[in-house]
Amino acid sequence: MEIRLALQEDMEGIKALLRKYHRDTISEEDRPDGFVTTAITDEQLTRLINKEKGVTVIAEPVEGEPDKILGFCFAAPWEFWSSWPLFRHMMDIIPEYEFESKKLVLDETYQYGPMCIDRSIRGTGAFEKLFFASLDQFRDRFPLMLTFVNQINKRSENAHNNKAHMQTIGTFDFGDNHYFLMGIHTDAADKYFR
Image 1 (cartoon, helix red, strand yellow):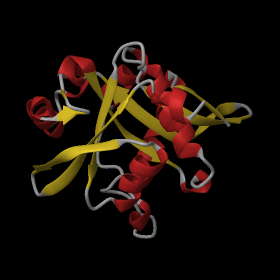
Image 2: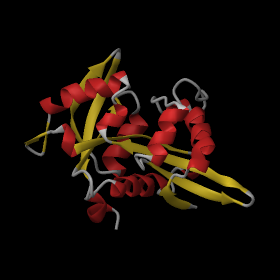
Image 3: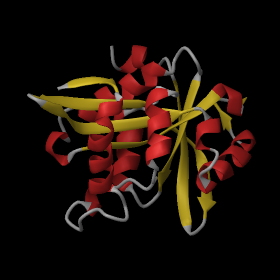
Image 4: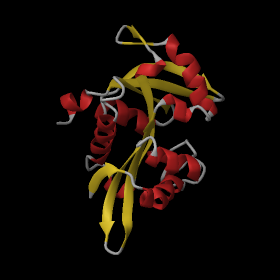
């Protein structure tokens, strides 16, 4: 397995993994272990891969076929996410929060997530490797990464607090859901994963 930036030929594998673990299509057996809530169109995913360089994957080579995608992580500047209502809401409220006693500024932050790891490699350190590889991709562009975690998704909350060493900045509501707003410095890979 290798962790790398996604290529256009990885798109079908990314979409298959997203369908497998998306809130709307996940099996009841897999649901207690966490789920992904963000939907993305083919056009948006193509832009995220090619223009934003915002998809990091765990890929397993398969001879004569495209690599099997066992994990992905999306990340991009806020402008990319602005067509999603939840992200527009986040863009509106982020300046109301502070991180380590400093007011949050949209231009100094970007949005990470969703991240998805296939059940077959969970518990192997894959989450941490993928998380910090994605974080490293943006360290020259932004000092701070932000994300949100649905408060009912305890597996994701635990992983981001304990494995990714993210800090909870605050909470917010959108629709009928309650979220944690979380952040981390993009140079954290040097401290936690080198």
